[in-house]
Image 1 (cartoon, rainbow, N blue to C red):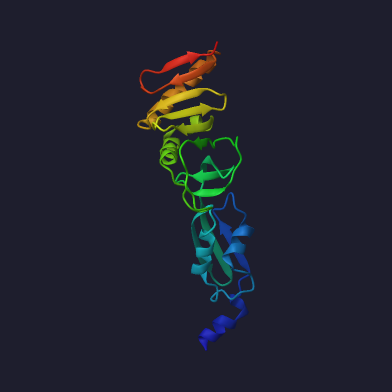
Image 2 (cartoon, helix red, strand yellow):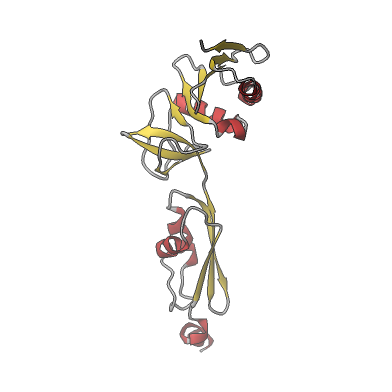
Length: 219
């Protein structure tokens, strides 16, 4: 009798659905994918199934659904953040720090350098992009200072595994091998800032040897 009352009582009819943690995704889209709707009995809502559906969204890293009695459901999500772009089948797509294909992107987006070099394998949105050079480049991107990363247009890894960065202004920064990428990135940022203050135009900066940068100026 108690179970019958709980399942039939209008007191436990869902009237509020809240989404927390969403930045890129709209609350409406998340709720729609979850399958939870207002007017449903709160005990009949399959919250585990709803969380699983939400986590199928490529931009979602984690999702939890919580009952707040008597008539509210809270959906808490953790979104993936794009850190770079790759060119797949003629279009740019965003990837996060784990290399997961998030969504279609746009070249020139501030803070999202394009990773180039080597062959790529991908199964589709929500799946990790794979490739030896790509994975090395992604690791480098994650180690670079944020200020430098936001000023990059491209990160390239050649067949010899040497990494080259290109700034939005067109300056080529030869990083050498991926080891000590964070340390080299700090040096690059410092040198670029100093030369910019001096009003000098640079063709390239070679940081293959971190403590001995070579600078070539434009004529």
